[in-house]
Image (cartoon, rainbow over all chains, first blue to last red; front, top):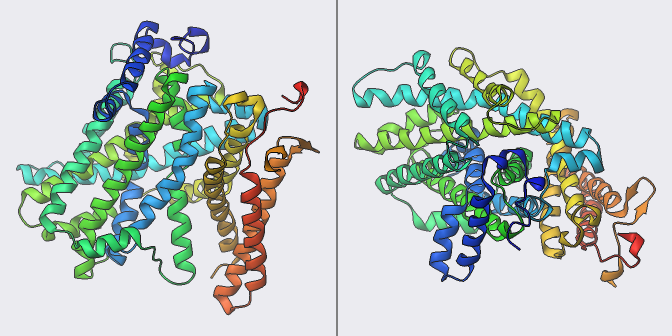
Length: 455
Length: 75
C-alpha cells in the first residue's frame, strides 16, 4: 500500500518539508524501477540514492585520506586489501541502519534511550559519537581545505593565503549546510547531489593523476587480494585500527537520520541497500584505491615519507609532471574536506537534536546554530589542532564505539523493536558480530596500551 | 536445534544475547592479552587459544536469529 510509511504521523520532522505526494511518487517510481532491466534500474537507483553518498562524503575526510596516503607512501600497494575488507565489514552494520530506517521507521537514539538507557543513546551515540566528533574533527578539515586553496591559487595566477581564504571555505560550506532540508532547496536532495558531484570530482581528478603516474598492476592486484601486514604488534594495531575506523558511530547514526529525513519507508529498503553499496562502499574503495596507487607509484618509489596531509601533497607535486596534473590533484583533494565538513555539520545538528530531544526544524535558529557549530574549525587556520581535545574524544570513542555497536545489534534482533522485521539472517548477524569484535579490540587495545601491556 | 534457542529470553537484568556480548568481550580481552604475551616473549599461547575459542563460540551462538515467539506473551 503506497503511503503506508509516508503518512505525517510517522514521519521524521525533516521529511515533513517534503510533500506526501512527492514521497508517494517516489515510491511508485521505485515500484516501476523494479520491473525495469538491470542497467535502467541501477541508473534510477543512482538518481534516487543519497544518504549513502552523504556517508561516503562523511567518511572520506582528511583523516582517512591522510592515513591512506601515509600507508601507501610507507608500504606501497601492500595494504590495499584493508580498504575493502574494513568497509565490507562495516556494510553489515549499515544494513542494520537501513532496516531501522525503512522497516522500523524510527530514529535510533530514541529507541536506544527507551531500551538501553540514555547513556548509550543520547550520550554515547548522539553526543560523544556524533556531536563531539563533528566538532573536533572539523579542525582537520579546515586546516587541509584552506591549505589546499592556498596551494592551488598560485597555479591560477594569484595568491590567496589561508588567513583570508577560510572566509570562502566557510561561505561555501555554510551555504551547502544550510541548504539541507529546505523546501526551496529541494529538501535534502540538493545537498546530496552536491555530495555526489564532490565524489565524482575526487574520482575524476585523482583518476587522471593516476593515469599520469601509471599503475603497477601486478603489485596493485597483489595488494588488493593478498592480505599482508607489517609483522608484530604494529601490524595487528594497523589492521584493527583500519577495520574499525572506516565506519563508526557517526556513520551509523547519520545514515539512519539522513534516510528518515528523505522520508524513506518500507518500500525504500532495496534502494537503501543499493545506496550503501554503490553510494558508500564503491566510492570509498575506489577513491582510496586511486589515491593509494598514486602515492605507491610516486612517494613510495622515491622512498619519501612525509607525515601530514599538507606535506604529502606538497611532496607529490613535483612527481606528477605537467602543471595541470598538480592542479587536478589539488582540486580533487579540495573536494575531500569540503564534502566532509558539510556532511559532518549536518550530522552534528542531527546528533545535538537527538541528544537533547529537540524536534529538528531546518528553518529554526536552533538548527542553524547546531549545524554551524563545527565551523569553529576555522580556528585551525591560526592554531594547531586541539590535541588534548582530540585525545580525550578519541579515548571516549575507543571505549564507547563497541557499546553502541552492541546496542544496535541487540535492537536488530529484538522482537519488541522490529517485530517480524528483525534480522532473520545468520550471516548478517555474524557480519555485525565480526565488526563488534573489532570494535571491542580497539577498546581493549586502548586500555592495554595505557597499561603498557601491548608490545 | 538451533531454531529453538531463544536468545531474547531474559536471565536476570539482561537477555541471553546481551550476556553473550559480554562473554564475547571477555573472550576478545583474553585473546588479546595472550597475543600481547606471544608478541612480547612467546608466553601467551594458552590465553590466546582460550580467548579465540571463547570468541568463536560466542560469535557462532550469538548469530542465531531470534525465533518467532512460541507463546503469545513472548512477543
